[in-house]
Length: 189
Image (tube, rainbow, N blue to C red):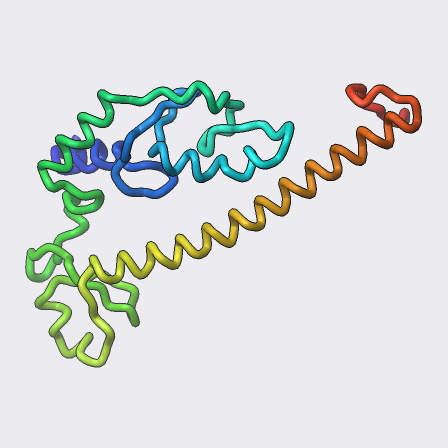
């Protein structure tokens, strides 16, 4: 494997699957996946409010006991060492170098949706376009993703509330009809 690609793969493994940045105070859960402590806690706030709601891993959906969060100190130490090297996801791959100028792609053309080097960003092809440093555009897109995620979290919370309400109605209905709320009733063919 290409050493740059290998380093990139290692750096990618140190990103939290929820916030997509380096893990902060990483915790491991029952299934073995690791997340930022704050990201996982924030994701699990809604189920905590709904009684009888099960917690699951955001990646594999394995049932998880929230009390079993284990700080992953070794992973935290590796993340800190990589931070000291000032490596960032995406900066090492050959695809992040301009083929024409052999410069790192540091700029982003919003109209074309392309990463460019500084020399290309000043070319006539992009002179009438909005070309910005990648860091500025990255924060803009991270904010858009954050807003979309918040919207989805609100929809998920509504779905959880509806499901809890339906479970309660089903249990009440079964109790009223003399059925066992734990049994599943199936209609014969």
